Amino acid sequence: MRHQLRPLFDRVVIKELEPDRVRRSGLIVPPGTDEPPPQHGIVLAVGPGLDWWAHVGVKMPVKPGDHVVFPASAGVWVEVDEERLLVCRVGELLGVLEQVADCYYCSERTLAAGDTCPVCGREGAAITRDAPGDPDPGA
Image 1 (tube, rainbow, N blue to C red):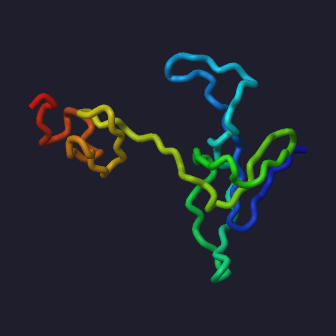
Image 2: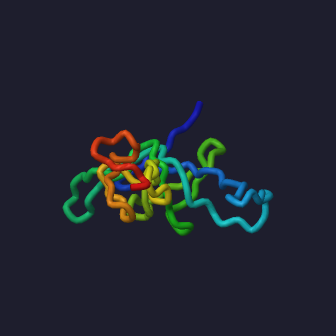
Image 3: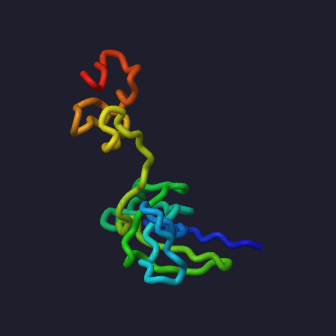
């Protein structure tokens, strides 16, 4: 029989992601070298949320399946059925990693729908040449 950890209050349960052992430069980092503790993970479960001052439930900003970033000092590591899990307060999370499209014209910047590129001034929806009213990138 498997167990599932159900977080209470404003806590979340996170499964750590294995660190990427291949750097952008192509360098392969062998296991056991001086590695920082894991700081990325996938949310497995979310508590109901609680506002300690008003004693009412609050909407949690993360949901199961979110890819989150957290500091090395966040929460407590526990082992459930030989699986290492982080249990921390939602306020300890640094953010949620989301996939965004590259700006077609700048390619260095990433844009979410509705965001404006700080370099070329185009909106996130205008990431293809086919966008109506957009001039050619060379213009």
